Length: 323
Length: 148
Image 1 (cartoon, rainbow over the protein chains, first blue to last red):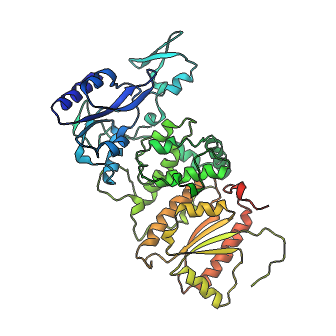
Image 2 (image 1 turned 135 degrees about the vertical axis):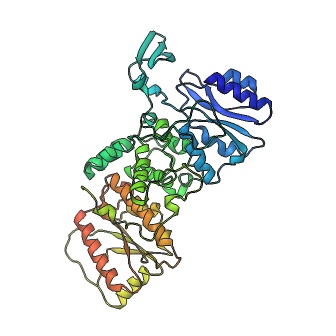
């Protein structure tokens, strides 16, 4: 797959149809993959990588790269194409200046899950027929592929590319996923249990802003959280209110626009399940205002910028289910 | 105006009122000499749609025990459709607060027209009583803002 991608990228660079390529390159460690922009065939040969750790959603980089001179080639996994569609719909990217090559999606691996098994000094991780062969400083270890899958991939919603100019590999289908199960489980708890659950989770937050910074829906030039008057400064919270406020507002600002790509939880250094907040909004929107998948198309109106005269009243929240 | 002499808990209620209906409704309940609790502090907004989620959270941060948002009846918005957007936004916000385990009865949306002075007073009486029963807001307060 990696060879096919490099080959195609080189062809397009050489015939001048694209000026730049957005993909991934290796960082300090083998599993430490970072998004990167490539401008020549040499760079591609040297650094371009596509493997089980290339989980980063690179669509956000198009906000900047698509505004530059010349076309940009981007490799998108199915989940990333939803983000691109959403950005196109919001006029954040210049779609005409982007050449999308759809590539197969995950499941991708979560290095933290491998490390959690007590495996240290990791030099390389190879997928040998769904058994991971992990080469470490202290010898070789193995573990099943299925135990190291990223959470966001474990509840994958779609393997279908919603926008692309060409495909490498095959296109898949929208899947039946269990992504709302955890939300539902929380909903069925008592208010006290939910409160305790979220206090435990959100109190871990160090306000690194990684969830905001990585989010393809968070592309405002000026963010409310950068406003010194917002009362939610860029420092670890000194009161539980700040944690609640930051996370409620962060999730609310992407409500109806979040494609559920799961990047927020993936990048969280404290492993807070942030995607649950987003999914709660998605679940509510689906049940109250009709099924809606952000990024599935570029024409429909987002639920929060739309209304009908017979929408339910806010009191529906107070009337439902267990306290 | 009633003078409440007993020492029971007095909640602080913040009411965001639309300039074109509920604010005038509050005025009408006043000129009609209807009683509603002094716990209610009214903040006038040009449209219920002006209230963003941050306002609600900020009110709780600064010591509110309950927040109520009053606007024109659906279909009667001075700006045609503002309150329809409010309705969706607040439904989702309240649902999220509930999801985080914050008592859902501390928040409410009520439609009160300029002619409904009686409804305004009744709503405020009832809401204040409901919040009084819940007790002080502890789950969404900012301790740094608590008055000694």
